Length: 222
Image (cartoon, rainbow, N blue to C red; front, side, top):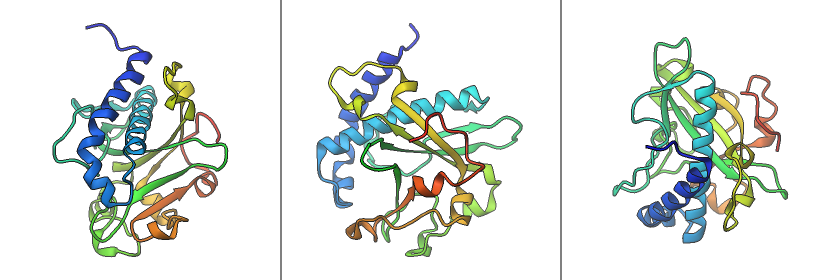
């Protein structure tokens, strides 16, 4: 098998997004997003950021368990809130669940990353019974701090243009890697600015994240 090129990654991400958007449409639309083009674009961006995160983590010595790198499979069950990557950081004797959060980099505002948090549907990092005050799940409280981490990345809007070609490192910036428990301790899970979404989601804003001195060194400042 020939090694995958960066051009392949962009095309593979486009193909994945086109296929997966149909399987998650009903679920996502119940959360307020019924624009199929936007859903497709979001999944395209997320795969680019996941792939770049995987690249950088491998460079840092993270070893991913077989079958738990970037997942390109399409599942009939639809939307999942499980971790995106599963790997072992250097010096650790346990696996880390790695959640990769992505958003489009925009010149009009700084980045923010969305987490599902409602009575019916939540990201797995939250204790469902704590609604409406976000609290970590029992699993996160019981496990080592680095067993559950979040990677925050942004993607250039140029990647949405037809025929876009560039390196993944130019298209995607990874801004932080932090243990989930730190995000809770520092109260970084905030209600979204849009009132109609405040009972469905929580957001981590770049303005708050950028103040953290011990965050993973970013590849590019927004």
